[in-house]
Length: 557
Image (cartoon, rainbow, N blue to C red; front, top):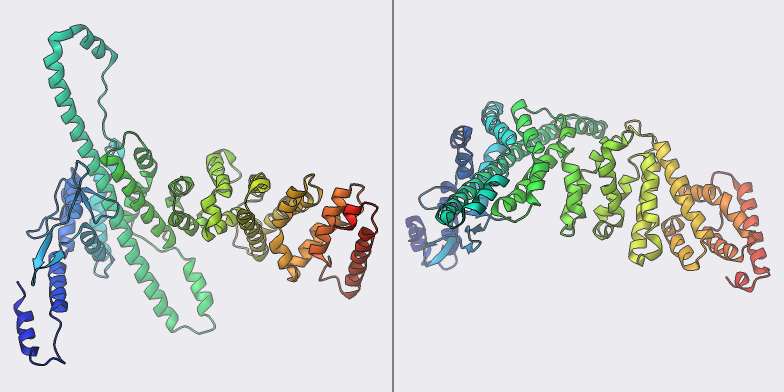
């Protein structure tokens, strides 16, 4: 039925065509207001759901997923899908969302699980949700979270028979057929109950992750607003420096929220193990969704610069990296990993045993097509070159073995990676806030990477290999008019090029001639005019010598 206020308004304006009101729009607005009222959540309801979940996970899970209102009721046996908008029955068949008629036979969807979750999270983001309420909320979660963690109740319990029982059953024969049938039925019910209990625990972890993330987002919004208000009245000369200082200041967080976040972060590895286990089940599917929710919470904690944020990336980075290297990875996964790349600076390269496995996964990124095809992936690999001097050569060797057999597009990606890594090492060499010595990073890149490529481009035995390797330095050649690039080319090519031009090997002289043309004139821009003239004369003399070479292939090169 159309609301009375809509009918009255339509009747009043019906005679005036120019000022008529769209009844459909009014119906939509009235319906949205009705849905909003039905979907409203109070902090007292949330507290009640959390505090009732001292022993069982169901009260909070029901509060999130099994919304129980007279007109908008979720089925308590539904399995929530990836996007939270669709409901699936236990047999895997997709159930359609209930729809209700409003006016003129139009159908308006009932409140979805996503609407419910957004309403709950909006409550935590609001200014009214102060510290005292937050302490009460998160303190109520800690006992059950600790119990779930200790008992590992998110793993479905499996029934195993001992060897003695198996042999006994084998000896009893036909007399135990009836008992074995009843045993199988009871065992099936037991497994179903355990599966349901594990599912509830996984969903409870997911609900807690949503609540912590929403609370963190609210803190970030309020902190950002305070900083903007403070900077609004600051002197224009000091705004930039003040913002820079504020961004580096750790944002305080209440102990209860920190403890909940810490417990959730500690479940990442077990949940990952559960999500990849066989056979597939409802709990395993939900564990993947819970993993994603805890990922988002940890990322929010990191990006918000909260206190002790480094504690929330120890499990996040390896799992995100594994996800990005999987065949099912998407570009969004690469972007998420790139957004927390600064957390890799916390790795202790002095203790190689502790990061050996992680290093192997990081080295795999340089041969991953998805990383090389996305801008964030290439930037991430470039960042890896700046982690530690000892890691530079490992990355270069992993790339070097790929060069002879990759496509032109991949070569361009490697060229961009090398140039970006070298340029970043030059730009940050005077940054005192970095723990790693930037001078060592730049030296490692120039001597272990770039000069090695230069040597291979001149001395490679196969012409196609030499050409392929030289193409990796194309970005340096196109930007050689930049003083810092030109100085680097002169510094690194100097010991190699002039000697190669006079080599007894004709193939080396041919490949050196290509480099001479690409780098002409090879000079030091800081050496002065006289030194430049000497370099130009030396280059011209080398060209003349090549034109008069005894080998025809050298002369025509």
